[in-house]
Length: 328
Image 1: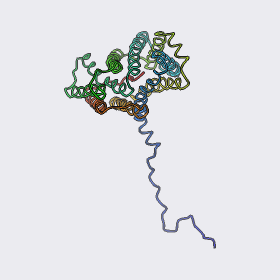
Image 2 (image 1 turned 60 degrees about the horizontal axis):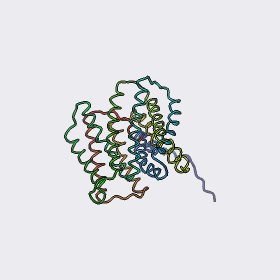
Image 3 (image 1 turned 120 degrees about the vertical axis):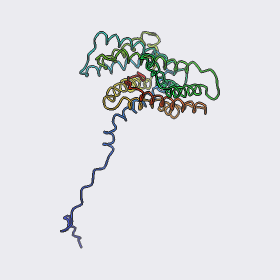
Image 4 (image 1 turned 135 degrees about the horizontal axis):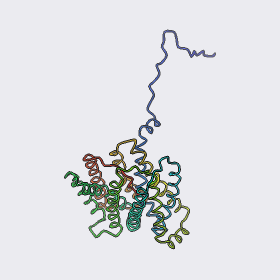
């Protein structure tokens, strides 16, 4: 016997009211796109130290940097061609050249440092840029920071001392020293960049394109025979690694910052990018199988906590523009 099922509501019965739309993953991604992309930038920057560390086992430092920035220059050329604002006068061009040269110096220190120390140490020590830069800006602008900032900065410095001590206090190795030097030079670079570009309407893409090309030329010219020799020994995996450093850690990171700073606050951009050392530790330990002794773990906690706290104090003290200052 067939069962007759009516799809019409019985008389006197109201149809079910439509349910309120549920928040889904698409809505979540749309509302938090800027935050997610900025965390992505912090993550790829954190991963760059391990990626570079692996490459230094297969090629010279200048060959790695040369290949990375030649690839980045080609990608930036494509981006520049599709950019509507290409404004770049003589001053803007010279600024691009100058900061290309200083960036080349920073990246040389960083890459040699990564070669001689662990990726975890490198990612943590370079984060001291967050502490050094506001101090240099205060000296430049003659506007001093509150005492609480220097307390947080001291905590971060103590963290560096513990980190480089390993499982016992000893003289830091050359890699750690080079990374600390890179953090200081990067702080000078960022401070000068902020002061020299304020009030001038240059195309950020054009200036960065010039800076990227200058880096490619400097690194290639620094050791032409060594660069050519290393190119011939790079494997397909090495070239994939280099493309990742160029596309993700250089071009993607820069473009996301340009876009995100217009979609959210400068403070939020800085705080999200400040998670870079956390990603460096996670990636170095879990993917690179690097080990930290208990003093190293304590040092990592103090560096991250002190730097993050110092950054928060500095952002409350005054508004500071966010600049593309990660691994370029």
